[in-house]
Length: 353
Image (cartoon, rainbow, N blue to C red):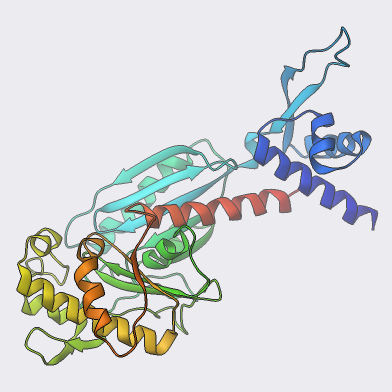
């Protein structure tokens, strides 16, 4: 029982230092609601384990201001977490400390179309650069491809615009603990003020959807829930076609790829925009029928620009749902990856106490 109480106290001390960066033993006692001797004993234990150290800074003392107090803070032994995104534009890696600050950042561009060997090398290089001379505890990865939830490997699906084969970030970053998920899922989790039940529709070079139910992303048996590219919807000529084919028929794909040409799409006329709005409304109708979200959030590089036409088309559907533009912006994927990396890093630090 005593060991459990000590462990809980140490956990509270570490988390207080994560929030405030440096505290005296007296401040720790007041912050946590424990006695000064108990706070002092916890600091001693954590110092012996190399997680906490005296910063050398002192409080003003004397002349009625009490005893001089020593400030304590977490040591570099607390470590960092890697936050990594793999996208058509390239690989970005950051190392985050327990305060949520980026202490190093690296980026590597990749070719279009992506080559598996090049993406793998870009991932290794970027991760190695931000890991140098640091204790790395774990990595969280967001990838612009479907992800097998059991293995963390990227899944090769037909017509995916970013085909890198079965890239295996877990193996490439071994022996670290590695968490991998689809980029749209991370964007959904980064959405500020998100409700417990909503759908996040990503409309960019690729097409995706995250379903959040009871506050959790639903990934499906193999991790492929939300892969909407082949969902049947209304085509430009009124026939049912896979969603991805709508952009092919409108001439809005990049040459030699199924990736959507965002610049050309945003410059398209009213007829093309109306066709796109109708196609998206069909996708939203399917999502509403199957997942019953409270709202649909529209993100990506071009979806928010067409929100008016999309909403008008959705209003004509038998079952409507509120639509709004994503609030997290274009850095939503990295924001979601960062948040998960920070949570896991803090949990790893407290678990090691």
